[in-house]
Amino acid sequence: ETGQHLMEVKQVADQLNLGFLGLGFDPMWRREDIPVMPKGRYDIMRAYMPKKGKLGLDMMLRTCTIQANLDFDSEADMVMKFRTSLALQPIATALFANSPFTEGRPNGFLSARANVWTDTDPDRTGMLDFVFEDGFGYERYADYALDAPMYFAKRGETYVDLSGQSFRAFMDGKLDALPGDRATAQDWADHLTTLFPEVRLKQYLEMRGADGGPWSRICALPALWAGIFYDAPSLAAAWDLCKDWDIADHERLRRDVTRLGLKAEVGGRSVRDIAVDMVAIAKQGLKNRARFSGGMVDERGYITELEDIADSGVTSADRLLELYNGEWGGDISRVYRDYAY
Image (tube, rainbow, N blue to C red; front, side, top):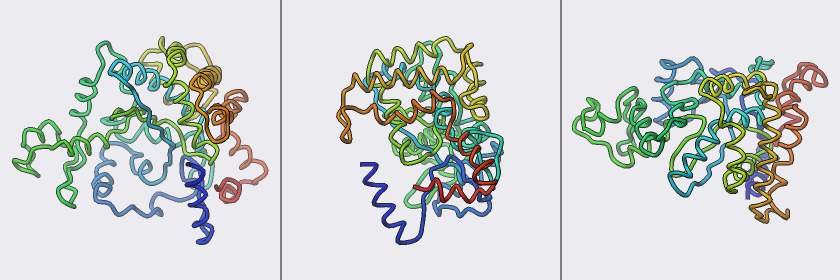
């Protein structure tokens, strides 16, 4: 399905002389050069984000990700999967690191996209320490969401600016911008879309740690997490990789992988070694899951590229930097020719 979609897009794009590039951060354009999507909620976000962090507008305008949504079948299952995937999200960030350029030159990061999220808005991003606390469940996440400042409410076709205001007050009908108007279930659903942690809970769990990448890596991300999530022994093995990490480990790892990628360390181990184990666990989970896919015996073929990255310790960002400093002779325009879909 993904391949068919991309083929159809490419056929149209070729006629228009357009290309699509799979990176995590725009390699050339300045923030002010990028056109803004004409959408009411984005106008509100653009005005509010600079008040909360230095890089929020870069998040909106210059980053690109691959995300995957995965199911849980009970509250206990959600908690286990949330904790495991949140702790291991920086490992995925390292595996998929693919954004080493900004405005035509190396930016000092392997995942500039992931770095952007460290200075966007602390009220609605990050590693969510409370997920690892005893008693975590749906109610605790709902409290987190209720306490996150709002962006907007939609009334008819109009987005009403409620940036920084309390959803709890909205539930009580106490917002000056909408006097007497109480929040609806749709308002709550909209509000949940304005939270951007590394893993987001809705009716499913959303993996948010990976850079955008080439065609071959689009299906690798959901395959990686499906292999871990949808096989009980694999989920348990993945949790064993990270269960002893503390909150300081989570925060440090999240920041370290943006620059160091697979060379970062946590809990006395290299991220590369953990990534090798993580991919192997996912591979076994996909084998156990035994779902025929795309002419393959099962879905393990989707993560072959991740195996290569983990085994070699060389990320896509590392390879891009090698090309930039070597074959490309510092000419960033080559990325559009050599890495376009």
